Length: 312
Length: 250
Image (tube, rainbow over all chains, first blue to last red; front, top):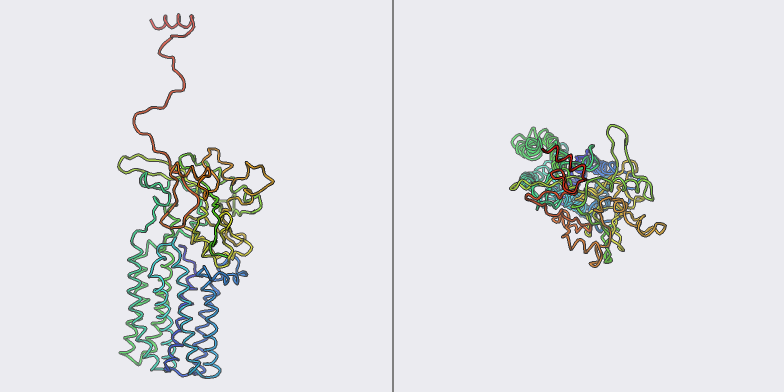
């Protein structure tokens, strides 16, 4: 599949933003962080900026962005529609939680519960994003059980690292110390999930040029004449080969930057507490870089079965 | 509504494509373009049509495949037209977030309402067969309509009320009819020739069926001669010719 920049930005930015909102809700619910005005303003501004910028980017690739509101109507059958509806619904608890935190200076009691509801909504929204891809049977690399866990784990690690870094700057050390433990766990899970995902997509798929044409009984099928001598929409959108050429190297980069390095850096900040802010800052940058590579691969490596008609 | 029809009628309009007959002339694709670029559904966009890199929306594209039996070395060339299969479990319909994509309850035709389509392209990702294309000019998705503006058009004579690709095929490789009715001509044809689905493992239940090429004749059989050759004998020739023949032969 063609890895469109807008979709890569959409999935990574909203993932990090929702991850941030998730951990804010959890921290408040556990009473690990007080509702400080300055800290709240900055953290919520970053979280909502990531989410809103991501959602807007996803509408930019539409042929008719002015009709985007229509995408909210088909939640009964369409995961894209469900994602739109949930993204909007999630603004209600997370918005209330942010307002209470920043304006009322309160993130306890009822507001802590609202924060927790916002945390759950955030993860459900990330899940619906992953299901947009997971539900497409025509792209076997996406239609697997590994897709949704991958999206959820990477949202939790990127958002969590972002929050640890900002909490470290703000001096909320109990929150940081609590936060890094689940992040370490999720980084390890993410590492295993991505390895399993890649070993799964390297296996041959059920469809072939033989099943696509139904000519398998006559032998091995190959295209000898394309319908046209210029690439058409189908080939531009679904056919993409650069990734497969460099996939080994890119997978290594995604694993090292997205999971291994942040893991090592978190352990490093335990060993050298004086450099903890610096370590966590670097961890945020390498993780985001690793995730963008991972997401680029997720699109570029996925082979659409229509390419079987084109020998690509 | 992008849910599939809850009470679909028994009627399933579709095409039957005979791969034994198709000669790969592309006339079906050309007439499809002609009808859909000029009729009710117009325009069907072309980009840079006479330039170096022409592109555009087509509902029907013709591939040519070769199937080689690795043991015997016998190969077959098969011309393969491919358009929307109007699937019963159309994945392009259910993924649509706007309700623009729908499957008609009354005859099973899959259509796009271009007045509400947002051009998100997800339907083209969901279709295993590449039946949906994006119209860059209009910013919406387009697809084969089974010539809905032709097959029900009462201004046309009855024999013209078939999709443009069917009426134009010079070889008679394409048939149109109700594949939901086991007594219809197309259903009988599918039964007799063992018509099949493309990519059955995708579980889309296509309505359109393909008829396989008939087995290739193998052996030393030569093509029948249409003319009796007289070169080796002068029997039956005229008197003068026989006399000349006798002199020259000697």
